[in-house]
Amino acid sequence: MVNLLFHHAALLAPSASSTGGLGAQSVNGLVSMLLDLSDRGYTVAGAALGLCLLPLGSLAYRSSRLPRVIGALLIVGLGVSTLTAYACPGLPELVQQALAPPPIADFWLVLYLVARAGRVWASVLVRTWSG
Image 1 (spheres, helix red, strand yellow):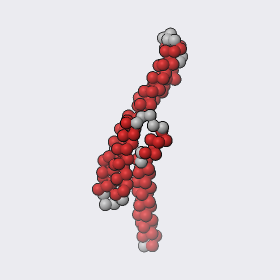
Image 2 (cartoon, helix red, strand yellow; image 1 turned 90 degrees about the vertical axis):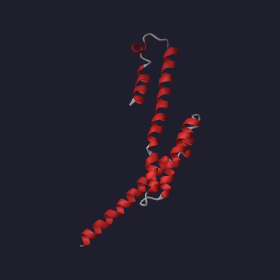
Image 3 (spheres, helix red, strand yellow; image 1 turned 180 degrees about the vertical axis):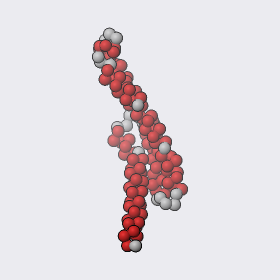
Image 4 (cartoon, helix red, strand yellow; image 1 turned 135 degrees about the vertical axis):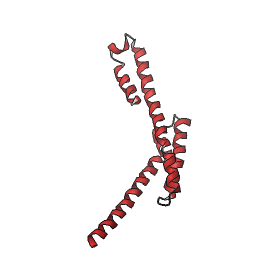
């Protein structure tokens, strides 16, 4: 929510009523600062969201019902994505996404759970209709 506030403030800053008579150069600097704050806010939010992958990956790794490789990807992906976001902030977005496997691990976890649930429901339907 706070990031959206920075976006909104950056859109409002060029209007004369909200800047209090600042010059064009000052307004441009203010807009640039607000957009930079928004970008940094998304990085912090991504790290906070990524922290939920650590317990999820740990549970998936320990579970006998899920493949261990998905749990390992979730745990390792958290470290890699956080490291690339903070240690190398100048990397292009495409490179950061290629180095960070959490979206891939999340996708495979969801796909595995859906496939497993589909098999369970199919066996329930077969038993129901045959009995």
